[in-house]
Length: 148
Image (tube, rainbow, N blue to C red):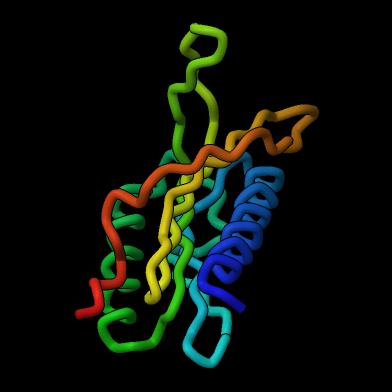
């Protein structure tokens, strides 16, 4: 599997998992899905995935904690690819009009490079999340250091 294929696989799996949690709870906690060098799937979360009190949840603190732990594991050589997913609201422009959209922001990176950020829009219909479009952007900051 190429790094591009592996990142696509991580994107699909973590997006599905996040939308499943949105269906169940109305939101999702931040989560990182990673692949080890042996291909093992590893999840990194900062709290109980079954937590349902969104107002009491320290979302920014959890994102910082997960990011810190993921970078530590990368430095220790435990991961080869990661997908970190967080709740966001994005401002989009369609037909010249700006509007807010619920999104799952997924930051993907691979030790071989080729990382990017994907924003998956979704709407709620009859209590279920309905995926919309995926918008791709350059990854603002890599998780893996550049190889020399």
